[in-house]
Length: 547
Image 1 (cartoon, rainbow, N blue to C red):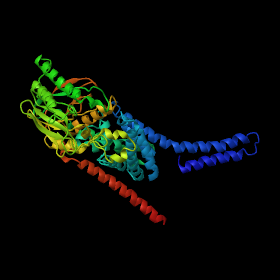
Image 2: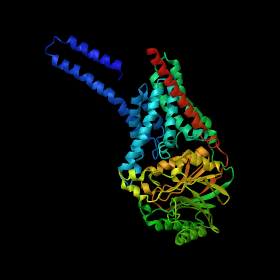
Image 3: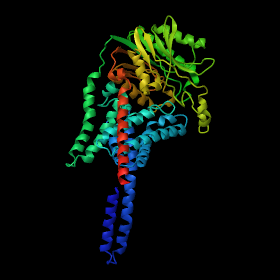
Image 4: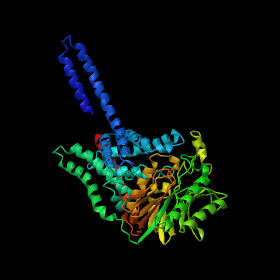
């Protein structure tokens, strides 16, 4: 409730008390009304925005897969816009933290799977504080003309920050990753995930602005700007629709992904590492038998998941023999997910290209290493809060170069699991010549949580962003084949051994998002800086006049 409204309520209550002062019989009830009603109203006014900030976060969470409720995201941002409009910076920060908690507590609950709530709560708190910094900026620009534009740009600045810091960033929860089924999706091919997120935020803030000024005929310009904020993202998505295609530019190939399953879920999934390897080898051999029986077409190449062989085949002859036998039996190149353990230095999360004749011929080392999962920053300090850090006894080290395997004449780009969340990791792989993207993953650590569906949504957005088929082999599910238009044509069930075989298009055309890289993000960041600069200039001008 505004200050003027509060004063008005107090005056009305005072008048009522004065008029009834002579009535002894009603004096007690009048005093109760005078004392109680403003207090209740005051507390209701104070709690309304914090409660709605939390609610906006919950609505945003509900917009994410596995629920196909993408349209809730603009509504969530509209509600957040009401919370932030005209607020001071400090209030904007606090409301943003509450929004972040409402959004990220349920979204990231899987990060505590098997290790308890401490890592989950720590991550959510840190990310919510960063969202608070973002909404602080949105509150500052909310007083500017056409504020939905400036506010949406500041939101993207916040996403850019969270994707880069701290510890290399954590892009999970980008607005774009909740939109694989949304009408804005074609914008990913035009400007990548930053432009897609920007469209959702602009539409959401524009919706609130339409409601705020739409009924006021004296503010025609403001109403027009608000309507434009809603219409422009929709028009842009419609204009970008021709960029979305699943046509075969370089012919087609038959690809297979293997899901071997694991003995058990959780952090102990690889306690029986040989069993995990055997599961994937046996499922590949079974696929070869199905091919002989004419049940499925013979693939041109096969992709195994990340961690499908946590036994280093270069160091363990037995593991080498198991893999080599499976590859020879299927008779085509296979990409194997393994962990390499050199005598010195960090471990390597590696994809190995295994030829049925030559054996292992090429490798790709994962470049984006997950903090507190594959490496432990500040190990001694973090151990004070959770002994689970010692599950990672030896840190993994990052690779340096993108990996594109020549598999039966097709350029298959490797984007290992966590890397799919990072714009530059996927983009650089396509720029290096990938005609198909493979995202070998291991989600067994996180059981049957929503994590695998959230990552699958990322993969669908990446398919449209770069106009490439995306193959998703996962140890325990959900594995999938995604066409370049973002549609899933095949997928497995969770914790079920399976193989997917599909004819897929090869594409080499680069979308604007691929070709121009982070340009769209930089342009939006420039808009955010301009808005913040204008806001500070207005504040200084007002303070100068008042002095």
